[in-house]
Length: 175
Image (tube, rainbow, N blue to C red; front, side):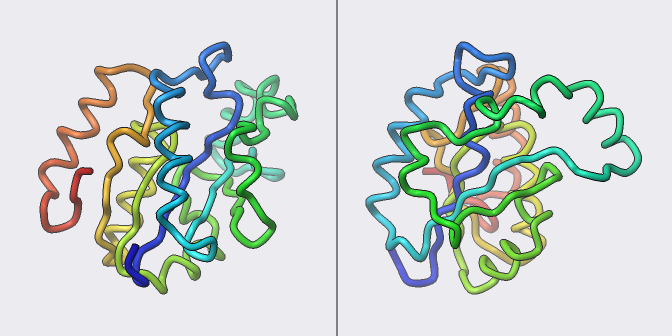
C-alpha cells in the first residue's frame, strides 16, 4: 500500500457474529477479507475501532444504553472477534462511544496523517456509514472494501452502496 493510506477496521466485535443478537450477514467472508487485507499494510497503518457504551451518556444515548444494557454489560459480546484480536495493540485500538469512528479524537488525529482510508468492518448502515461521512468531511479519499464490510442484511448493504455511489468516484472508490 502507499504510504499515504490506512486500513480502518470498524467494530468487529463478537456481538455481530451470526449466533448473536446484532448478527450481520456475510461475517465469515468479511473476516477472511480483513485478514487478507491486513497483510497489505504495515502495522503502523492499520487501525481498529471498538464501540463501547458511554459511561455518562447524554440525551438519546441514555435510552440507547438502557435498551441495550444486557449487550453493553456482556464482556464476550463486546470483545473483538478472535480472528482479528491478535492484530490489536494498545497503539492501534481506538474505543469510541458514538457511531462514527472519529468520535474518538485520538483516531481523528492519527487518520489526519493519511490521504486515503480503506474501510472495512460493521455495521455497513450504521458505524461504517457514519465513519465514512466523517472521513469525507476531513477531506479523505475512501476505498469502500465491499467484501470487507457487513451489514444486517443484503437490502441494507445495497442501500448504503446506492447512497455512496452518488459520491463516487470523487470521494469514494469501490473495491
